[in-house]
Each structure stands twice: as structure tokens, then as C-alpha cells.
Image 1 (cartoon, rainbow, N blue to C red):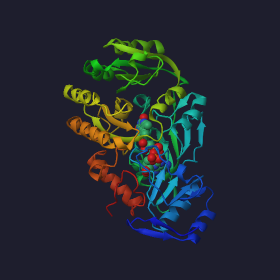
Image 2 (cartoon, rainbow, N blue to C red):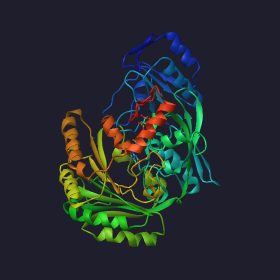
Image 3 (cartoon, helix red, strand yellow):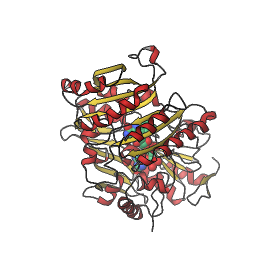
Image 4 (cartoon, rainbow, N blue to C red):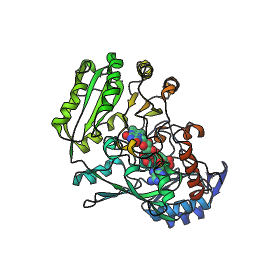
Length: 474
Ligand SMILES: Cc1cc2nc3c(=O)[nH]c(=O)nc-3n(C[C@H](O)[C@H](O)[C@H](O)COP(=O)(O)OP(=O)(O)OC[C@H]3O[C@@H](n4cnc5c(N)ncnc54)[C@H](O)[C@@H]3O)c2cc1C
């Protein structure tokens, strides 16, 4: 192999010699890829097709020792490093252009202590891996809603989904984490060990180290949930949304009801005449007696015309994978998001105005309801800062061809600006590459200051900067 010129941390280049690479490889149990290695073009790919970056080296780790060796190799040679968990982050931070990508995608073991309801989850797991093992015992870890999302990035930024209103965010259920630090040391972070690091990784993302395994509390939810999709005509969107904003806030935490404005997918329970039409989809999950859930959902079914619905008991694993096909890998994606103070009339008007002009068939306007256990936690208890806003607005712009980039990006930016007056912060995991001031908006001032302190302690050289970066001040 010839020497490789790699991107370094000073925005310059470092030449890594054949001997250095061979020595690294010979002490590494996983695989090392570079341009020309069989499989290189597969391992460098991430979910968002907007990013076609080419790392000079990909270190695909199979265990903690590999992660330590990769971090040491990167630090000793001053290489730019990125960390890939599930590769889902829409900002494309998992992959460096020219540096060293530390890929955790083979580290996907999950073990469940069913007596104590605790899951130990490797840092490269996908959400589907966790459901697969925990559901053997009717358990679930609070996380997101698409089974091919990585646990690593999701849980380090917050992590919300269908059961978080009842059981808290992923960060609220984290008991401990095993972390490889910038110095290449292996430490445990928990309430009693390295508590500052434990606080920081519960919302501060991958800024402080590489998590090789998490321990999470599991919730007992059984293997089936009363859940469904109720599809409304978009022509009544304003009226429905005004009702929704009040009604969902009156429901017990066991019930989670969200809204998605989009073109109707060809769902088998919808008449063909509805396929492709603008609709408001109202998905819900009820963690309780189905008869009670049926009563609670009735006002939603009755408010404005329902074009079709699919409601009933569904296996949890199936429900968790039910949306996977709508957001599969490779399409072009651009996300803009806010937490919303409320869904006031002018806010709804703005949402409906922009939703009526979706620039592609695959775009979604996604409005989850967040209140419940996440908002009951004390502000500042973890680094996930914005716990009081009731709703999130995620402008999920998604399309296939580069020729449509300009139109799609502009629509998202205009929509985002048009709804700025109703915003109160943003979820760090829904940020695109928007600059440092915007990253700060994911946190309160106090939380940001504390995150900088944690960064100063654990990564003062900012080796882990391919993320929503918290720069050290020291
Ligand atoms: C289709 C889709 C659906 C989503 N749904 C939800 C949802 O329901 N709820 C929700 O809360 N979020 C959701 N998200 C957002 C999701 O939380 C983020 O995209 C998250 O970053 C994904 O994690 P990942 O490991 O796949 O990402 P990656 O792109 O692999 O990683 C993102 C960053 O996280 C860090 N990182 C990842 N793993 C580790 C690790 N083990 N140790 C240290 N750092 C690490 C790195 O800094 C990396 O740059 C969704 C995203 C997509 C694309």
C-alpha cells in the first residue's frame, strides 16, 4: 500500500506511511478500509444521500480495544476523526472527508437482564436490534420511531419516541455508559462514576468520547400495543390542528398522538383515490387497556373527515418498523426544526401554508407532542435542555435528484424562517449543519456553559469535533 495523505485537525494534511498503516492494521481485530479496498464504497455511505464524503481510512471496529486503538492512531497522527453509529444523522457528521472514520456498525450486541429490566446495548446498535432482544421479555427501551436509526447518536442527543411521554427520553433511562475518551482511556460514566461526563453525554452528543456500550432501564410494555394511523383530508388541516393542539395535551401520558402532513403513501387501508393526495396523518400509540384507548381516540376519528384508518393491536416490533420504508437510505434529505412554544393560530396558519407547497412527494411536516415524563424531569438534570416546549416541528425535506436541491432547500429554509416566531430552541439531533450559534439554541445558557466545562475536561483538544460541536474554551 502507498502512503496516504489524510486530513488533519489543523485543516491541513498529514501523510501516513505504509508502515504506520500496517502497524495499525496488525493490532486491529476489525477491518481497515481505504479507497480501493473491497467494500470501501459501502462502509463510507451514510443514510443521507446528500453526503458523498470519502474518508481516507475507515476503521471498522469489532470491540472496545479496536475503538481505543483507532482513537490512539487518530490522536497520535493528529487526524480528523468522525464516529459512525447508525449513520443516520441528517447533518452527515458520521463521515469525514479525508480523515479517519471510526465505524461502530459491527458492534451491535444487546443483552437483557430481565429480572432487573436493564438492557446493555453496544454503541453501534440500531433501534431494531434493541427491540428485537428486549421484546423477548415484553420490554422496550425508550427511543425513536424508525428501526434503522442508530442508538449511539440518538441516545447521546436525547432520544424520543412513542413511549417517551410515559417513560422518559432515552437520556432519562440511561443508567451508565462505557466510554473511550480522547486520551484513549476506557472509563465508565454513571451517577456515581465520572458524573460530569455522565451528565454531558445525556444530551451533549458525541462531543466527549466514544460510547462502546450503554445500559438502559427498560419499560414493561408487552409485545403488542393499541396503535394506529388515522388519515385526515388536508383541506381541513387548520380545523383539525386547532382541535389537536388542545386535545392531545389533555390526554394521559400513556397516549401519544402526533401529526404528519404529507402526500399520502399508497397504504392498503386508504382508497386509491387518496394515494398521493395531501393528507394529515395522525399516528398514535396507547400503552394501556385497548378499550380505554378506543374511547380516547374517538374524538380524533370524529373531528373532521377521516379518509381512512388502521387501528388495533399491533406487535411492537412491527409498529417500530412500520415507517422504515418511507425513510430508507440513500435519498437526499435536509432537515430544519424548532421546538414550538405552542401551536397558536398563526403558527398553524404558517404550517399549513408551507405544507400546501411541499416541493416533493416524499417531504413531511412532522409534529410530535413531547410533554409528559420528559417535561416532568428537572431542567438541567441532564444536558438535554429544552424540556418544556409541548411540540416539535420537523421540516423533513426529502427528494431523489440533485437537480431538485435548490427548490427543496429553499422551501425548507423559508418554512423554517416563517415559523421562527413560534420557536423555543431546537432538538440537537434534528439540526443540519447550521453553525455554532444555532447549536447553542439546542441548550440553555447554563447548560451550554456546563457542557463547555465538560468538554474542557474530557476533550480539550477537540478531537471529537465531527458532531454538533461544543468547542472547548481552555
Ligand atoms: C429517519 C430518521 C428518523 C429519526 N427518528 C428519530 C426519533 O424518532 N427520535 C429521535 O430522538 N431522533 C430521531 N432521529 C434523529 C436521530 O436521533 C439522529 O439522526 C441521530 O444522530 C442518529 O444516530 P446515529 O447513531 O444513527 O447517527 P450517526 O450519524 O452515526 O452519528 C451522529 C453523531 O453521533 C455521534 N455518535 C454516534 N454514535 C456514537 C457513539 N456510540 N459514541 C459516541 N458518539 C457517537 C457522532 O458524533 C456522530 O457524528 C431520526 C433520524 C432519522 C434519519
